[in-house]
Image (cartoon, rainbow, N blue to C red; front, side):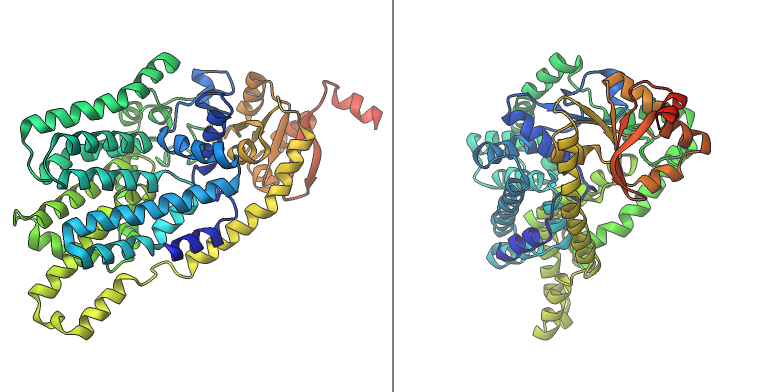
Length: 497
């Protein structure tokens, strides 16, 4: 717990820009302000369905923003509160892994599994990103633990409620419900029906809210942009999100089947490379060995490893079609670490060579080998420094704009969180840029990287951009805040000059 808190605090300079932490924090701030569960940072695609900004959240699950809102209500909405909330939930993950691990693998097994989670580089990185996977992992671990406890109605009901909250933290975790009742201790058909009904009841307020606010209880913007992300046919990774062209998975599959298959194959390759890194490489060996030795044994350990393996397979398959996010595996980090410990124990039991204390010590050390050191730490340090340096620019944006202004930006989530201004993500198609600005009545553009944006424009587009926009403040070749001209023509402005 001490190490994890120090690691997260040292490398947290603000949100990294590689996760969605700004969005979750902004949603929590909206809740505390009494503005409802609303987004003030929108994708252009969102404007197709609702031109208002802010608009009711149609992307993110609510559990983590609600958790953050509690911290914001007490300590205020800023990075310090987010950091404290991240450390607290990391500690809960450590405790949840310990209690579940002790139940499955005994006292020493629980301690070893806890250390595997608390010192894992991938888990620590996700924790300081302000992303909901850590909360999801905590809730999933406690839900499973209750099913392993004494068979009574209270534990069954609590497990279902907590699992429902886990789904409210990360929607993908709903797919783990099926293997949970296949591999966990048998409680009978009646218990499965009751558990499923309570999970649905836990989700029902959120589904009702979506039906009232969005017109569809299951509406989410991901169904129109996530499945086509990185498909290969579209020239930009986030093409659909940053355009006015909704495309469902089925539309993509019917029109571009080769590219969808290519994306799925690329996803499998991506996870085959990243899955070992998530458990520090060597963990794959005892995990596979434990699965081979215990899967058909019918023992609690075998059923638990079966749950872990099938859950990992489901998440990998979904994410291969989805956004290729290795972070989704962190949802299962308590299950994975405990399964690794079970497999390591079977190695010690079944192979005489590994009974030697020196060999056992070396294998345990391999489990804690920092797979991404020092590259992850160098990247985190660089990102923290960059974010700290950019905060002054966000403060400038807040000064140069009015509270009701909308800013179109290539870092719109940062503008929303740090400048407290409504924002729209820069459209990928140049012709859509001013269309988006007109829809939301925006006069401001902030570019974090002007050189990168200019390089993607044709000469005509670059001329058009500067004929419409003037730089308020900026550093040539780096960043710039632009404001739309007041309607005068280029000739009139030249005459004034």
